[in-house]
Length: 320
Image (cartoon, rainbow, N blue to C red):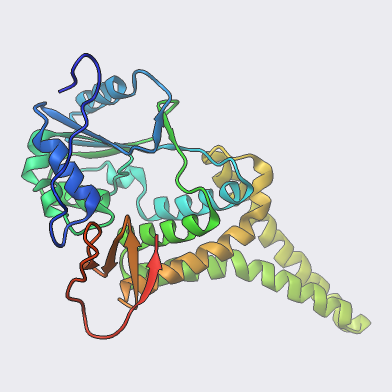
């Protein structure tokens, strides 16, 4: 509905009770559109190509795709972003690998709301944003519905189509990824398994190496020989782990030197997963764009500040 090549701005109605603001805005946008395909793009994404939409359309048509989502190229100008973003994103992709998402018969469903292209018929079949009106991570829930209805879901990387900088401060990153892990991984056992993997595969080798070095330095000559063997064994494990981290950072186009911060990033990710776990258990609430959620319940409305009914018991507030 662009007039003169420009996109119109549509004013939405007041936010209905129990509805997430973004989902409400998307509903209004769809209602004003007339095309066979719907494209949803986050406002903070920067299109680096004039052909990002036509390229996405060509790909969707070639693969007869009902729902196409394109991963962003992440901008990471600061030290903390370069160290932490690849680890958080890598963990997410471990649970939602593209080779499983793109297979129609697999239940694994994933989408990135920063760029989604859907057939209107697909959108209407799954119930659109009305169906996920209370969900903070609406992209993941839309993708799940697509798979449940037997439609074709596909996720792909992009090559110089668009870039996004997700979070501009450490505080935003912590709370943002906590919300993402809560909304996408979303189960107690998966979060616990993720935490256990980080502890065993990342932190344990470093702790064991440090303990072995300290023990060797404090041991007698006879005992030190055994600890030296332990140092060698754990050093090999640490080197292999860092080589794997190097590959991960290269996938996300971050300089190899930043992979040296992988242990710190793993420790921070462990804390973020703990925060997500508290959300899943309903022990903490999330405030996003002014609306406060406790589990799937909206407990504070964004536009009016109106308190909504909530579960018994007090909940700590975690603001995003």
